Length: 369
Image (cartoon, helix red, strand yellow):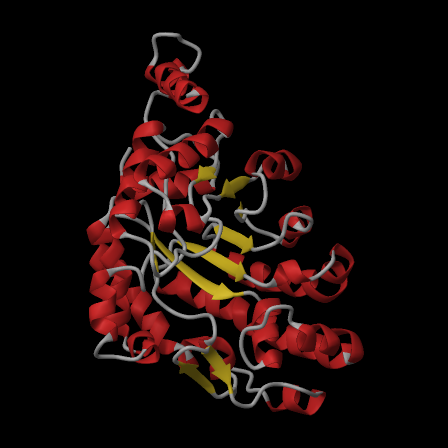
């Protein structure tokens, strides 16, 4: 088995020769190649140039033995295309200059065809898929309706999203109108990426951990489910990911997804036990990858892999995006370790002379030192 199909097989819970690994934010800010481009171009210039976006997509694939590429884009181009004025401000991050505050603001949003208004990313998908030439699969993605709504209402990032939650409870009709519009665009956007060549999709619900299970059921789940339903017309496997979602994972599974992403704050084994028969992605802490020694990284990755060994459908990833201060050599070491640690024949697992048994014995010894 090769890098070509390892990731896609894991998405379907099929046997793999070793655990596949890719990293959220693997294309971008921690890589010297990317920083060189950013010295000459803004982030929106890179995103909106299909050629440069495809180039950034391939940078980590050329540098590391990762098992999937993810298109270089940003979730906030979706609300921008719908009429919000987006700017990336140095030291502050993304800002919308005309945030949503009323039902009238929601009504002003454009109902768009992503194939037209987000054509730069669709073209980048086509270019990246061709340039990959079958080496690894390509993942397309979008922000989930809830997370996009939070950014649109807050006007940018937030610690607690108080404006968004107040809007949700105080103006429920406007909230539902906004979420319906976003879910339709997100679903079509994901579908369009699959049509352009993306072989898997990921729905990022980065801020959904700020709602309760009751709020999720009423104000979030129907719209995530609708976006996923539309995207799944492509038959591409879909990863459903959020942060702070330990109490929401069963509902996220119900909303849809072939793979459920688990963040760093949630125990992967407990989450998988609760989720049942579904592929799972996660969940090394990005802090460990950025700040830890190679030995620290191997130990923590080994702990995760040991705990889920024997289960089909594990995709190794971070619990959130790679930090910009992550040393590239740490990424290389992690990728190499995950592949080597899990590369034994799974049928040898019960044999004391097998590579799998020896590998896990070494891990036990390291833990007890």
